Image (cartoon, rainbow, N blue to C red; front, top):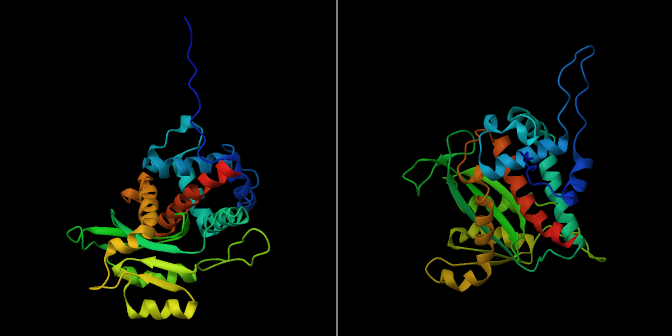
Length: 276
């Protein structure tokens, strides 16, 4: 009688991505003298567990320990620690830097859009005007000309899109470029739908030296600018393929922003992995 051996789960964190994240992980807290217990779960296994929860939408307490990721509670706690230390923001920037060095970021134009999802309550939520006023959150996504995520922010579903233009552009770090070019932190042009057609937004873009390509209410057809803006809609679809984001269960701003940042990092890392 032959015995079957179950194969390990596929790695969600590539070797290339792990090489970037490992130096960013803060050191573990010092052990309490004289205390014994279970060995600390490895950081890569924990990050794999966080990515597994993000991808599948499974509850933290339901994460199967036989997968080797450690307990869901361990993954959740480690994620909180890393988020408070700024690790997920630093990792996204590191991946963008690597892509920029490889010449894979196209700053000639960027697109900005958002998508609303239902939430089970918590911080960064609000009544969704498109879902009968039920609690929801909104993901605001900035992508380059090819659709690679440059930045992501989370807000309540009732926040107007135009209110997030300044925060999402102002919080962009300077990203390296290949060759001798200076680091970039702003695109040449910004494409947006009619939700961004606000004088305040256009004034802000002029101050930043960014050309506005925003559909004008009552004058422009959305389809006319859609030939450039479709890339952000595609990337929003990729973002919502991470099921933990598509229906929001995590209640704190720390956890939901960490998961959103990890999701856009994984989207960027697909390009990093295939072209490394």
